[in-house]
Image 1 (spheres, rainbow, N blue to C red):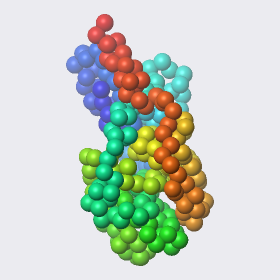
Image 2 (spheres, one colour; image 1 turned 45 degrees about the vertical axis):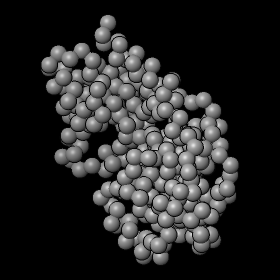
Image 3 (cartoon, one colour; image 1 turned 90 degrees about the horizontal axis):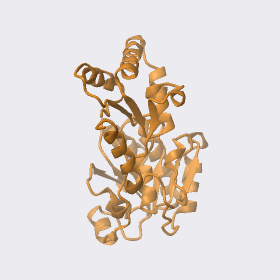
Image 4 (cartoon, helix red, strand yellow; image 1 turned 120 degrees about the vertical axis):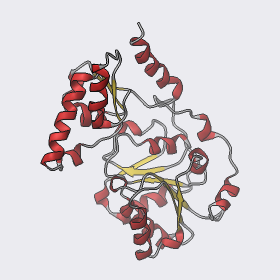
Length: 281
């Protein structure tokens, strides 16, 4: 069961040669845009890997329609080899009571602060520069606002420098990688997710499971918008001021938890186990 996108072609081809019965390619990413912009050597590699995946995998799973199209091709729906399988999360940690005030204090966040949150690698796809410009607009209207960024990555220094240029650095908390995300979501007031591309948007799903109002880019996979949750979807072209206004409109909403959805582990885990059992028969 390979999760390394195009390079799964190598792994699954070796597994096929070794006689492994079940060989699953799993797509978590929507790379169609970057793939189209690739140079000739990269395009040759992508073509070879997709051909290897089609030949050597016994089946392919994807977290969303967009992720499926990116790895398995635009006609994936017409072939039984490919399917979408929802990711699974245990909902309990996202609603478990936490000491919000103490956790805020540990992060240097005041009890009365309006805390915007984001979870993601510091990479171009996550669009941190736009997020900072949105936050600058919010901060101009709500001086007590703070931005909590969870994650790390190659663009972190660049993002920190931009925060300094925009005059918001002192109001931004770079929390680094954390293993207590469900608790950290409970210190936020609004979750902001302006990614350029996402295979699904797991962090967005987590935020909704925690009951947070979410403001997100409207071109992301719609499978990540859970029924009954509070999600405001905007185009990036609307600009930072419009995003800030949308954030302020939902700030202060009471927690709004989603209705039953396919990402609950009790729904998705049996589907995955059924696929494994298929190869044991």
